[in-house]
Amino acid sequence: MSSTTFDPLASRAQFPALNQDHQVYFDNAGGSQVVGSVATAVKDYLEETNVQLGASYDVAKQSTEIHARGLQAAASFMSAEKNEVVIGPSTTQLFSNLSLILNLPPSSEIILSALDHEGNIAPWLRLAALQSHTVKWWPSDPSSHPSLSPAETNPTLTPLNLRPLLSEKTKLVCCTHASNVLGNIHDIAAIAREVHTVPGAKLCVDGVALAPHREIDVKALGVDVYAFSWYKVYGPHNAILYASTAAQHSWSSLAHYFHPGTDLTTRLGLAAASYELLAAIPAVVNYFGPDRSKTWDAIAVHEEQLAEILLAYLRSRSDTTIFGERTAERAKRVPVISFVVQGKGSREVVEAVEEKSRFGLRWGSFYSKRLVEGVLGPGLGEEGVVRVSLVHYNTREEVEAFVRVLGGVLGD
Image (cartoon, rainbow, N blue to C red; front, side):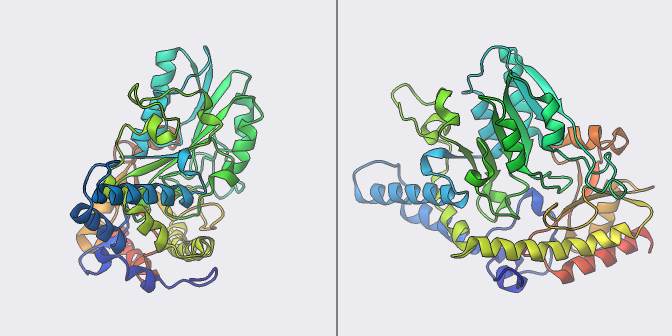
């Protein structure tokens, strides 16, 4: 791979699930396909080293070493230290666990965004209710091209619309790096700088929708907490949460009283890191090659080209509303594309496409009900939007074929 060219066939060869002709995966934001070496690593662990950690016999030593390598690989993937990360079943679960150990001062203020997946909203609402904190809701701005994307179809979080909500009582700000419905990328580094103008305020970021598409460097972003799910990033069904050493300073622990460790795994993990799944994380990391930055650059270029094929078609239709950025510019969005068609329900569109083709996609709100049914409009109802979510192993030919099928459904 290089920063300017990308061969999807080379990547596809490493995904066993793509070696068939009965399904084309366009629901990748719900969970990506898995690199073959990931499945092999899970199998090998279960067959060869499936014992408890920490014992002195040989296989236990091997298992303990595999576990340590998995945690180190997971941390390095986001430029973190091993004691700053914890593995868990899902991002939602890890945020929920985290809410149990935060010790916020009385009458603190928590800022939340309705653009988020509920996993980064519900734990903090519970925390606020239990500890009598105040919740403020973060508004959104139109994009920099309001004539193309009005605020109601392209809501965006910015440092400027965050600033009026901040006060000396602000202790926690939560937001998404990229929307799992809109595909928009928020400037997390700039938002982190704004949050940290308030002494003691911390930023908690949901990176689930961004992680399959871009390199993550938590230190460069300046975040305090960041989480994503590996099963969206070509890996096993588990997740990772990073917390800076400074952010952890005042936290309590969910560990048993006789486990006094101060690392994040001890404090937050609750022994929920499946050993065989953690053993597969190095295979995910290795998939991106020795120069991960170069690989991610190539992926971004390729995905931008894929997204533009579909977005160009949607822009050409007067009966179609695109949610999020209307262009595929990779600095602004990932290829998670949501839309509705005037006069047709989202479920109707999806099921008609699937009846006529091998494409698998989705309709709904995708655990972002506050965004879909509130911000974007109550008229969307339970059926929400049509979502097409692409990743780097999808091809130009697949997207072009999808446009033809969609055109047939919509009466081109």
